[in-house]
Amino acid sequence: MESGVCVYIGEALARYGFGAGHPFGPDRMDAFWKRACAQGLDRQVAVREPVAADQALIERFHSHQYVEQVKVQSRTGSGFLDCGDTPAFPGVYEAAATVVGTTVQAAWNLLDGRCRRAFSPIAGLHHARRDGAAGFCVFNDCGVAIETLRDRGVGRVAYVDIDAHHGDGVFYAFEDDPDLIFADLHEDGRYLYPGTGAADEQGRGPGRGSKLNIPMAPDAGDEAFRAAFDRVETFLEDRQPQFILFQCGADSVAGDPITHLRYSSAAHAYAARRLCALADRCCEGRLLAMGGGGYSRANLAAAWSAVLAELVACTR
Image (cartoon, rainbow, N blue to C red):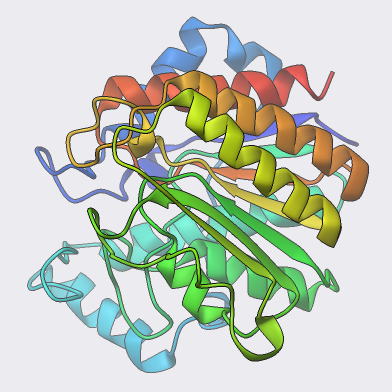
């Protein structure tokens, strides 16, 4: 039976964070959920528990050698999993596996008709590569979800990303794949990590033309966002996806401590509303929103609650 909107909340999911004081700390989920509950959204959704992925599921996207490395450093809790952005901590493997498992479970629930939309706040770890961590991202739950959806017979998956940072881990993993429809609005890589996502990066080989990168100028606000998002809608509509993954990183909201865009949470609400309408036309409503980045707790609480409110409003 369909539950409308499913939201994934639980301590196991909140554990994905790099300690108090780190921009990506373990308090991010609670900051969002307190705001959502204050708005009464908890009474309008089905709250689901996080689910841990097994190693075989993680390795649908990641290399076995890399997963084994994470397991070793998870036991020792020492060192970095990349060149210095993503520290190991005791239990990092289990925490990252829970992000993956929860995202995939949400996708399965959508496919099987157990809900119409889904939202997981600690998800959308879009920088991790097949063979390594990057940018606070240990495992790329987006990439695992895409591979899993393919295994379940979904041909055309759309990945839409409004995080301030380019979703490079997804883009390059599927750069030559014509059936991964990729649309990413991000702060211009000349000014922000990871320095990728130029407008002329449109895919390669058979995947050329299936990718849309829209670099946004620092200080771009809601008006510029809406104009750019109109291009995203047209791009997606022309390609008729069968499932939409929406990475709604809140680090593009004005005042984030490590980025320079100046959207309000209304931009996130707008994107969610437009994608719900598109999903209803193309995908039997199947839209999975993933929290992504966001390092001001007030900003992520406001932006993610705005996304969730639109998912609820568009599912009545």
